[in-house]
Amino acid sequence: MEEKMIATRESFGKAISELKDENIVVLDADLSSATKTDLFQKEYPDRFIEVGISEADMIGTAAGLATCGKIPFASTFAVFATGRVYDQIRSSIAYPKLNVKICGTHAGITVGEDGATHQMLEDINLMRGLPNMVVISPSDDIETRALVKEIAKYQGPVYLRLARMATPVIYANDVKFEIGKAIQLGEGIDATVFATGITVAEALKAQEELIKEGVDIRVVDVHTIKPIDKEMIVKCAKETSILLSVEDHNVIGGLGSAISDVLAEEYPKKLIKLGINDCFGKSGKAEDLIKYFKIDSKSIEETIKEKLYISKKTK
Amino acid sequence: MNKNIMKITKAEALSKNANRIRQDLITAIYYAKSGHPGGSLSCSDILAVLYFNEMNINPLKPDDKSRDRFVLSKGHSAPALYATLAERGYFSKDDLITLRNIDSVFQGHPDMNKVPGIDMTTGSLGQGLSVANGMAIASKMDKMGYRVYCLIGDGELEEGQIWEAAMTSSKFNLDNLCVIVDCNELQLIGKTEEVKGLNAENIEQKFKSFGFNTKVIDGHNIEEIMQAFENATLTKGKPTAIIAKTVKGKGISFMENNPAWHGKSLNDEEYKKAIEELNNV
Image (tube, rainbow over all chains, first blue to last red; front, side, top):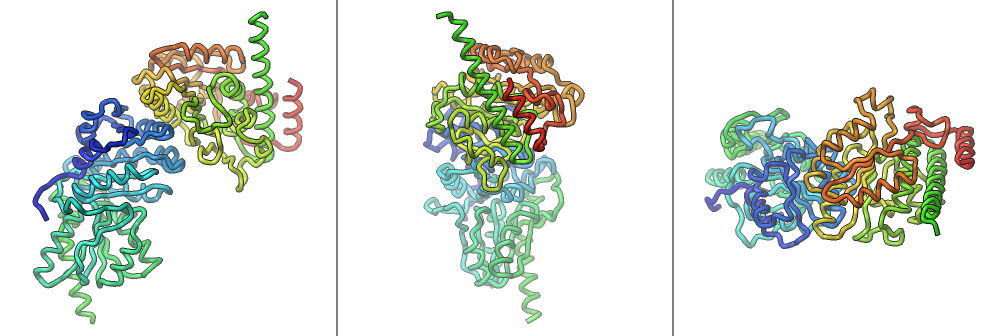
C-alpha cells in the first residue's frame, strides 16, 4: 500500500473534470468547494449549473436535463443528496430510469466534526431499496476515478457514495474496475472481510497485522453495493471460515444487509456485521470516530481473533 | 378574408377538441371506476390549445429532439393528458378505457416510458417545474430553441419545491419556459384560499416577485389562452407564468366547483348525464 492519502471526493472532482463526453453537466447546491465539483466548474463553466441551496430542485432539474440527452452529475453532501430528496429521486429519476448520477460526498461518520446531522448513515439503505438504482461506493483514488468513467458510460440512475476523509491509495493504475464486480484482495481462508468505501483501507491494515500472527484473511472490496456481486459472496462463504462485513453506515440496510440477503438465499452462513449500530453519529475527529464506532482496523482485527479463538475452542 | 373570422374559427375548432377531450377522459374514468375528473376537466381547454395550436410537436415523431416539451406537474390529471394525446393522434382512442387497468399503459399517473408523447413521468406533486427548468436549460445549452410548458395545479403551489424551482427559472432567464397554473381554487379538502391562503391574485403576485412575466386569464376562454401563449413566446429574458382561472369539474354541472369530484369516478347514471351535458354544448 502506498502512503499517498486522498479523499474520494477529491478524486471524484478530478475525474469528472477529465470526462470527455460533452453531454456531461454538473449540478451543485452551494457546496461545490467541498464536493470538489468546482474543479469541473473551472474547466467547463458552461456545463456547470448552480441551483443554490435547493437540493430537491437540483434533483428535478437533473431529471429534466437527462430527458433531453444530457448526462447530469448532481452533487452535494450525501445526507442532502439522498435523504432530503428521497421522493424526488424515487419519482423523477429512479422510476422513469433517467440517466442521472447522484453523487453524495461526505458520507458516513467520517464527516467528523460536523456531527450527526451531517453524518449520513442511511444512504446506502435508501438508495439500494430503489428499483433501477445502481449503488457505487469506491474505496480509493484509483477506483473512484475508474468508476466515475464507468458510471458516465452506464445508461441509467446511479448513486455514487464518496467520503470526506483522506484515505490511502490502494490500487495500482492498471487495475480494471467493473460495475457489479467486487475485488478480492488476498487469498486467505481464515476469514473474509467485506468492506466498502473508507473501510477497505482499514480492513487491509487488519489483514497486514493478522498475518504477523499467522491469521490469513482476505479482503473483498465491494465497490458496487447494487447490483451486488453474488458470485464473489458465495465463493468466499465457501472458501473461508469467518465472514465479516465492515462499513461506515448503519448496520441496518447497508453493505452487511446486502450480503446477508445473498447468503440467506444462496449459501446460509453466519455474517458478523461491523458498522454503526442503529444509532446516529456524533462530533469528533474522523480517526477517533472510526475507533469509537468500532469500524477501524483494530476492531476488525480483534473481532476476527476473538471469533477464531471461539471457533477453535468449540471444535 | 377577414382575419377575425379566421381566428374565431380556429378557437371554435379548439373548443371542439377540448369538448372531445372532456368526453374521452370522463369515459376513461368511468370505465376505470377511479381517477381524478375535477382537475382533468379544469385543464382540458388549456391542453387543447397547447397540443392543437401552440406546441411544435409531431405525433408521428414523439421523440423528436427538437420538439417542444410538456410537463404535467399535476400528474393526477393524467386522464386529460391521455385524452389529449389520443385526440392529437399519438395513439388510438380505443385504448383509453383501459385507464388504470393492470395490463394498460395508461397508469394512474403519467409514465414517460409507457405512453408515447409523454415527456416526463409525474405524480408526486411539486416536482414538475424543476424538471421543466432542466429541459429549458438543455434547450438553451444545445441552442435547439424548443419551448417547455409546465402545467401546475394551484393547490400544488403549496409544495416548497415549486418555489425553489421558480427561483431557478428566473435565475437562468428561461424565456423558453411557460408555466400554466390551473387555478381552479379547489383542492381535495376544500378551497386553496382556506387551506393555505392561495388565490389567483396572490399567485400572480408571487410569480411576479419571483421574476416571471405574468398574466391572469380565463382558463376556459380559448382566445385568451391562445393570446397568453403568444405573449409568452414574445417575452424575452424571463420566464412566463399564466395564471389560468378555471372551474374544477368544468363542463359537467354536478361536478363544477365541487371538491368532492377531485378524485372519484361516476356511476352509470352520472356518466350518462355527464356525456349528455357535454354533447349539448
